[in-house]
Length: 161
Image (cartoon, rainbow, N blue to C red; front, side, top):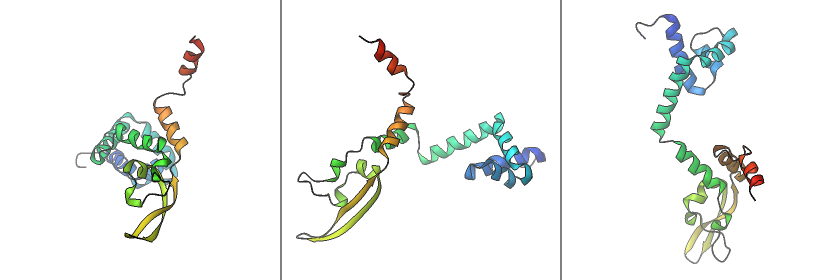
């Protein structure tokens, strides 16, 4: 941070510290601001256009490194929203072995309880109990993203013959 004055150095440090835990008060304290005023200073720093831009650049770089983009997030939310529990059982209604569950359904599961069974082909691991991630929450997220709840659809339906 050579060539920076103390004020600019603390602001740059705030940006680095905020990226750690997204806690403005804690970042302000770690950046050297007084703990007594950290909440106020953290809020004020987040409103600064230069700091907001620096944080946006860091966040974008982090997402790029992790290969996370809007499409990837929407795809995961859609897996949860449209997961079909029928895909956890075989055609005769028996639970599938854990290795037979496809990735799309596995991604929608929040918890899995299994049991090991001895069978004619040797031991196998079968599902005992599963819990899906909240479907309604995923549908709400998709609806919000697609702006389905704005009332526009309702007004169009009322006008349609």
